[in-house]
Image 1 (tube, rainbow, N blue to C red):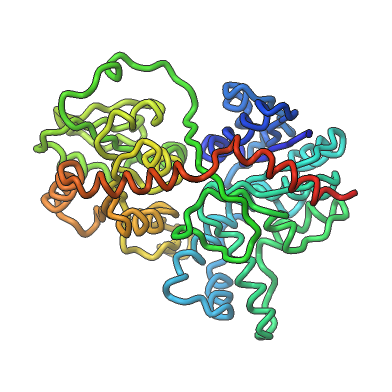
Image 2 (cartoon, rainbow, N blue to C red; image 1 turned 90 degrees about the vertical axis):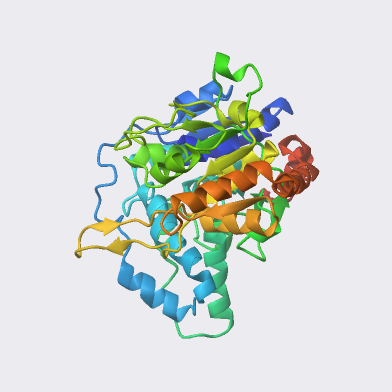
Length: 438
């Protein structure tokens, strides 16, 4: 088969898709990864074929159509009867997910997306696997006559929202404005005569590595799979050769944080807490993330970058922000986790009608923290409410109490029991044959 993967052109979106592309390529299929500029070097470094669609654009995030309409967010939340338990999910969908989608789906179809669809029309893939945060891939699939499926890299915010709108319509509720995701996808879809229906928005099926406790959508056809950690390659540093002399803890706050933020609100308290513990901490923080931090304890090693697949197997625990890459690499390494989260609402806080402040939590942190705590595989750390002494006690307990390692082992064994990317190839071949038009 000819298979095209299409992703948001950043490492945190590309890396989760790489194992599927590699597995399909090793199974003898012809595979390309097509996306806007920004990821070609990482694609090639993974041994894959890159197709760069269009040229870099300079406008970036400075666009009037990108900021979320907070009044619409509240109106729709009320009309859909979003419950308090669902509110964080709705806020992530409306503010973060939709803004990410609109970034690469401007109101007037971009030259980059036109190049993506044109490549699909010229190359004629049999199957398109696309990133839910980049639904231009779905339009390219439908326009070119390919079967298509989403590849989840986090809980299914978009599928959950599509189901909420469909449920409202099914129950005969008052007429709603259409799902904002439909508005975002429509300009590109109409350019190529593609109907924007639910199948276009959620794929003909979904490759889903999420456990049941972290799944948001309920009725979408899914193909379960084991998350296969890929963090990019790297030369192993000498200090990682030997086993550590005392318990080693990894501190990582992810690729997105280093891309978009300066300063790191969680780190100062964590560093103060570990200073008096008999542990070794490896903090994968770059200069932007260390901005404003003047005191690095003697038992903390800061490194700009080291692949987590190298670091975490040497560790007794992982302190992280709950995002998928770090979370699943920790599960694969069979270690307990300390996941940072707060009690803030997961929404943009408007400061003066123009400027806004983001919550000091990751858009997955509460889901991941609840999961590891419910399974005894770790704890939730709230840097805003807990004292240094409380944080220190948490870290000490996770490293020394056997129950946390037992909980982590249970999660690891469940993870191992799922089929890996190479084990779902036959399923992908069958599903493609069933769903490809003609």
